[in-house]
Image (cartoon, rainbow, N blue to C red; front, side, top):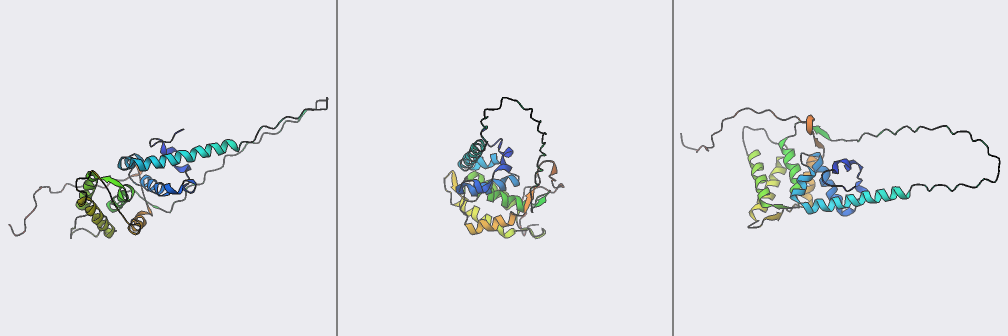
Length: 234
């Protein structure tokens, strides 16, 4: 059975990173991060289809080899020896041994599950999973940059955002990439290994609730005008 984006979730827990080719280990980590966050493999494919195709090709090969090894490990049927004794002895029926199914070991997870994930976590996750060191459409990066600046705009009345230094770093990277794009349709968002490691560390110990477990924030109506106040004018 060929594994595609649509049926990938059925096989994800059976994939062993150590048995995949080394060149797709980073892809495995990225996909795991994506699944733990609010973003699907299909969304990841929209940003970098070649990246996802390479990963799925490796995963399909992994399961193909797994099936072949299972077939080879089946014992061959023993050849029945011809009986030389003409007297047929009644064999006592062997008692049927019912094998109890082995209980599945629960997947150990040290990650803190967040039912209402903070904005800083979602923004850093999305940047790491979809944009860092990938070729992305300039239009997509522009919208993400605008959303980030709007969400975390400096406000003296607001409490300090956790990991704001990392968000500022992401903003610098995005601004540099977008402003230097010129007329290009796609650009690569270059991130050093050191910076990427810092970002991954910040989000590593969290997992986001999905579906019915997810709790969304409550909102209140606020004053909307669309007109910026000018200083010095009454």
